[in-house]
Length: 233
Image (cartoon, rainbow, N blue to C red):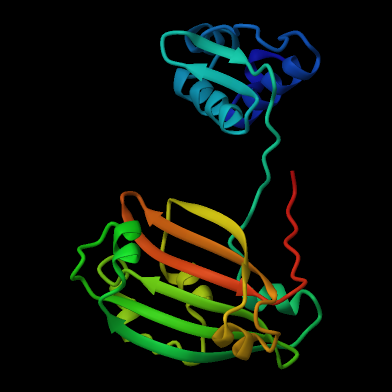
């Protein structure tokens, strides 16, 4: 591959990957610095930086300030997880999608919620509880808080016909998020809504999304017994 081939950061990323996989750069090796790579590839240093940063985020490079960049000794396999539109998720399974709004209110949230979302303890947030259905059977219970200071248009949306899950993905930009998975025991209320025995094992996803330094939404999605989450490495 000639220098003229390296026109974007993806092509540089591919070449760095090739050198790692071919063991031209072995685990633990210190690779050339950004300036030297930019000169070799005939591109801007920022382009090299973007390529190396992507590989570091994927766990293949270990970048340390003032210590340079090394090939990771033990590369970490990372899974890719998309924020799915639950409607599409259900329809892709060949099932009929249904939606039922349980509750919509602008209220002061519990302290744990305002602390997590870094909002003022007295600030009102929009609270949405809704049930997603597959073939008229309970599929997922959505319990969500929306920061209406970050997404003011949510104040005017009734969420009677479209879920907050779907509406936010269309209308609210975000830059990053935190996500956690857990197994919980169904409370009596959850068992009634999800049509499962009390204390049944449920799968919960807790997600908090941000637009730069401002929280957008905090949601807990609770799925019935036997739910599976699939992703790719």
